[in-house]
Image (cartoon, rainbow, N blue to C red; front, side, top):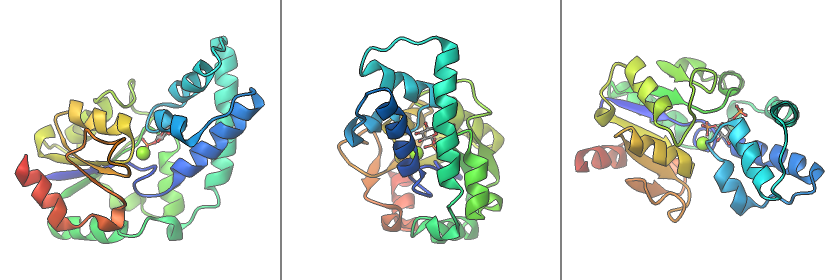
Amino acid sequence: MEACIFDLDGVIVDTARFHFLAWKRLAAELGIKLTEQYNEKLKGVSRLDSLNFILELKQITLSTEEKVQLADKKNAWFVEYIHSMSPRDIYPGVLELLAKLKSENIKVGLASSSKNARIVLAQLGISEEFEVIVDGTMITNTKPHPEIFLKTALLLNTPPARCLVIEDAAAGVAAAKAAGMGCIGIGNNLILNQADLVVGNMAELSWTVLNQIMQRR
Ligand code: B16
Ligand code: MG
């Protein structure tokens, strides 16, 4: 392994909870009930793709302009929620893993579909931890397309096969695999079954486990 690429929402911090709250609030305004189970489809994909998934629930057709207005509304709520975040919100195990990767000379990148990724990292005080940051403003195709991970690998100057991705979303795991990378899923085994290994949370992820996965490939 030469590089480790982190997803942000749901891996480093629980912004996934804020995305869900904001989408649920918007869906309710449209007379749609958004369940946690359906919300899995929204994870890791772009803002507009998430909205389209919600509209599909009631076969609602809207113009692009109307969709942009709704997506902006959701984003304003999301941005309001994330302003309450601080370094205390970083998941247990993340800072320790970042320190270990650094001491082992592994390059560290961040690949988030979110256009708000840099605000979140600044709130958490960890922007400087990543050699390369690729966010939703820098890509054309969001996860499950491999573009974001391939771009991160390119900027890290590392062949995809030598990269290991850490992801919490099914779309993200699919993107990492499509990029030809190793992938560790954080969360539910049934949802993330394409990953090389799934662990329940970041605190369970040790340096030894990362190494084993990369050697097994
Ligand atoms: P925004 P990640 C993703 O971030 C979220 O998982 C996904 O649910 C969200 O729709 C997407 O960012 C876009 O976010 O509306 O802030 O641009 O998991 O790739 O870090
Ligand atoms: Mg995520």
